[in-house]
Image 1 (cartoon, helix red, strand yellow):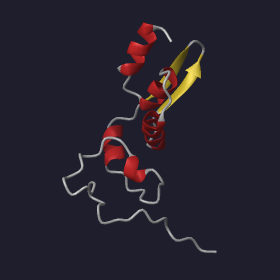
Image 2 (cartoon, rainbow, N blue to C red):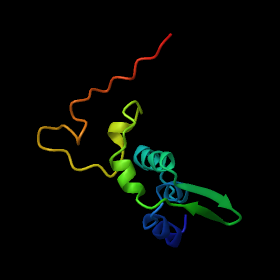
Image 3 (tube, rainbow, N blue to C red):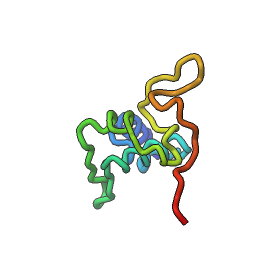
Image 4 (cartoon, rainbow, N blue to C red):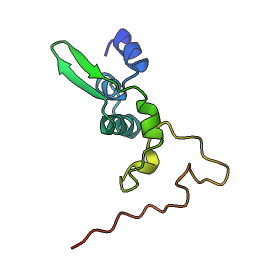
Length: 103
């Protein structure tokens, strides 16, 4: 990837678009892009570039996500920093138990 493209990807506001433009595809960019996709961010390849949509306030939607059954809920971006006791945010009393399903 060219230096200009890397710099553009670094400052891109849309996590989905940043994921596809960036050469690195580690777990953090993937989680950021997945959470952004879940709240409505898009990045679709159109010709030589991406056409994207970023809903207003998407970071707050991710920060206050109420989908506790999501496997990556505790890894979502834009959370408040963890307190010294190691628990995170408003759902610190929740364990990572999946929701019960009827069989």
